[in-house]
Image (cartoon, rainbow, N blue to C red; front, top):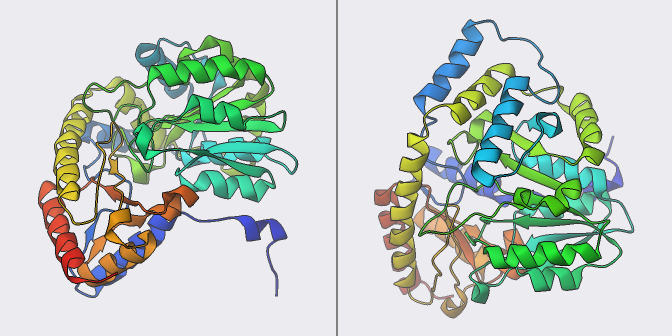
Length: 392
């Protein structure tokens, strides 16, 4: 019986998809399920984007494209980055990829190997650690702390770096916490990187346009002193409600762009052509739907945080971005994954236990407020009833 090579024993998963599958199975049984677990907007893709894909199909865009993406789309990405960050990105350093996750996969695959360290946020997106371990590199968690409003700490990250550090992953606004790292921390981090000239940086900015209350997104693209070792991850999934379209992009330094192109040729050839035309329409067309979606998320953020703070044994900080709350349940007496499991099975509310995002996630759960206000209110009521009646 064939078996995968030993490296596959080290590869992990993203439990949000397991929770999504279980929630779907319960719903198929006729159960009432409210999914506050999966990280995707509950809004439809804006109509003009959908129509651009349909038109591309009707116009005959049915074949292969360049492995790095159609030129018009890469130029539009460069123009958008210049407008939003003030940084000039060369279109020939941009790759269009099938979803944002592909950029972290390829970057870690390029740079990870036994004998090197890769730093990543904890709690953070679970695929970071999964891919680091797959390559044989040593995963080094950067603590993301509630007392710091879940912002990245430059001092803590820099203190963990050594001559073995090959890559540092940063994420703001952050999944799963909603934390937004202020400019002062980014400035300090970039300044400190001068001591480690061989370390690359992967900046995951997929939530860059989902911000609240005047929070500022500071892109690492805006620091020319690290341009020769910065990998930028961004895309369309969250901003334009296009998770199922599988469309993202990366900006690569000159030293890595050819490796990125070769990986594309070997792994997926190119992103499907109609989706690329949809992405072009998203960047160059009206942005009203994005603004409306973020406004709706902001209202839901208040509803979620106020509701969580009213629950027994639960406390929650106000997230500055993304569409997640990361409440502490330490005072409830529950372990996070046990609580998430019981809530799904007994109340039909799907959440993600904090340990699925790292060892420092224990004592927390992730709540996605990419759901209607009515669903959020109902879910909070079910959780309150459960916590009031069920012993730990």
